[in-house]
Length: 484
Image 1 (cartoon, rainbow, N blue to C red):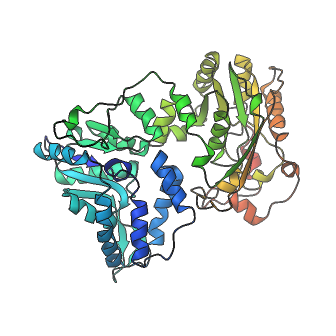
Image 2: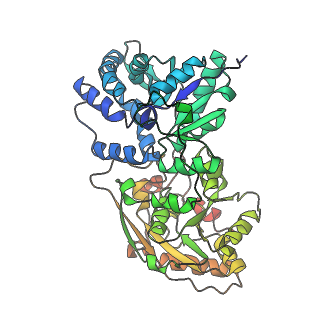
Image 3: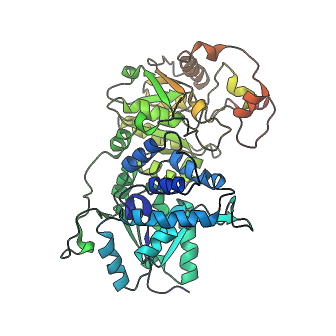
């Protein structure tokens, strides 16, 4: 049974605090003797975080922190957190205090909702007089050391919403009457679930989301003015901006310190008018590589993506807001092609990967690329030029066998080679023949080693398989090509 009153949920980093708490915690852990040295590239990661906020790689690293904590003493961690609390309290943004008072006066409990482990943030919450903490919790052994597992959800994105919902149910709080504050686009599920969402110091992607959803934006960093009502603070105006162009402006190698990029041929991308950009598919990192390539031009791009992308929390909402086109291959629906055709008629660039998915196992090493017919059919429908892109090395950043990219390799990052070719000459009579022309053009942009016939090792086959999946060497041939 919920009450008519809500609660106020505050994110920590870049929302309640002016920057990243991780740097403070890392220093406290070193001083307590819990770690002997900093992680390579750690300072760069903090600088990137303070500039652009959370990224999938940074959160993948945070997700793995529980395994690094295994065997550490909880009591020692808690003492280190007590020492860190004073430094963190000095980072609290000036206008947070009057905002707290406004909520207290209305009878709303104030809750810190953060991905950061509970034992690290609880001392800060006590210093600030907050009512409770919703945070990631680590499992414990009988001797008081961490056991390397999570005790409950990883409190991030949809996991944070689930944890907040569980807290609200236990405390009889109505989310429809509640407030939530965050800088991060990955907190979109939580902000969308409360009746009063507020964006604070938004990261570049949250600027887009706030504009799309008309969420008010607060600045808690302004010098405190006792005569000023927090609730009357000026909001960032929703201007008539091109959301895609703004999004691509933040696609820069600086945000990918764990990869180097060798890009050539962007002059082949038409400066205006419709175009279909097609690339081979080697890694989950391919979309980022294509986006970074398009960002070097003055164009924007709309991606065709599998339905799983659009069904995912947060990522799907952003893809929709940016004009992404959903593809559900299992239905045989013509709607994705019609939507892509409409975008091309509007003069947009549409990007797609004709292979449909990353080749599995031994098929990954086949020098002959096989594609589905979608790109050829779209070109026949619209007569838009087809521009090929050859990608090589993305699998070194994020192999199919890994659930997350290797974000720690900032000392000697792999080189990703990206080549943009000239328009593919198509006949528009046979989608199968045109698809072969498209795939041949892409193959021609790949390095000579891609054309070598060889038998991959079992280790190489394993790298090209989804985590935990086993397959026969012949499986890939039965799955592709396809007409959808």
